[in-house]
Image 1 (cartoon, rainbow, N blue to C red):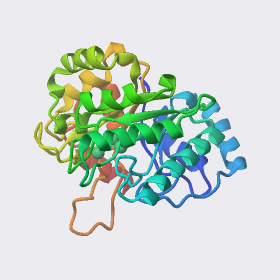
Image 2 (cartoon, rainbow, N blue to C red; image 1 turned 90 degrees about the vertical axis):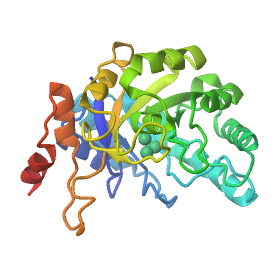
Image 3 (spheres, rainbow, N blue to C red; image 1 turned 180 degrees about the vertical axis):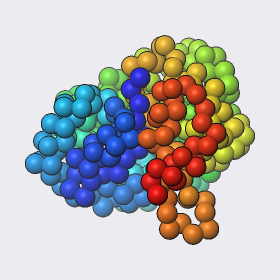
Image 4 (cartoon, helix red, strand yellow; image 1 turned 45 degrees about the horizontal axis):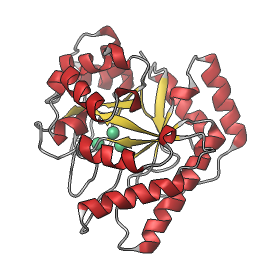
Amino acid sequence: MIIGSHVSFGKDGLLGSVLEAISYGANTFMFYTGAPQNTIRKPIDIKNTLEAQKVMKEKNINIDKVICHAPYIVNLANNLDEEKYKFSINFLKNEVARCEEMGIKFLVLHPGSSVGIDREIALNNIVRGLNEIITTDSKVMILLETMAGKGTELGRNLEELKYILDGVLIKDKIGVCLDSCHLNDAGYNMGNFEAFLEEFDRLIGIQNIKCIHINDSKNEINTHKDRHANIGFGTIGFENILEIVNNEKLKDIPKILETPYIGEDDSDKARIYPPYKFEIEMIKKGEFNSNLMGDIREYYR
Ligand code: FE
Ligand code: FE
Ligand code: ZN
């Protein structure tokens, strides 16, 4: 099983991400090249990157399965502000270049939000933007994430994703990243993942799935909320999550946890702990730990 979690980008680059992933017992990981909520980015530190690649080799982390995630605030869907739209395109061109510099093959992108314009126009904006960003000589594949459909988000169903994928000219540089929480919230039953995969295969083709975000959901199916829950502590449930991660057809696809830190909901957020080491252990064992939160607090105390 290729499994890891979201990790932070080190102060000096990728090495910090690799070391964090190793501390969770992961064999892959996902990172942002800076803060997820802004677009301030430093140039890639080559020395740090080489060191990160060396450690990955030593620890059997296949760099071809490592995932980069673009910041949430770039939006290719809305072009009411032509400057902002152009900024998003340029930012993503640079993000692709940064991935290439580090040897990262996949960049996950939220398709965007239409905010006040027609959804079909918004989808066409995304296609147009992607066709500017994706070039034949690019070594990076952009993965469109399945979204919960919160607000005016696009990519809330497979038809919208298919529409974008169909419009992208260079087909071997575009793919899909599933997110189990988002799919649940968008109205897809994660209790019958096999049926979902069949529908996906019929519409888009299962070979286009390159990454899966494994999250439980704090909300019921079809609520369009997008609030991640810890594995086994949400409405999808542990057994259904196991069915997804152990699916034979997706066994070579990296599984990435983006579950909330423990203590995030506490009134004082003084102490918060990453759940990933324990969630990865639980998933690998295939046995639900109802005292997960307690064990995590105990371990990091
Ligand atoms: Fe995402
Ligand atoms: Fe996600
Ligand atoms: Zn989400």
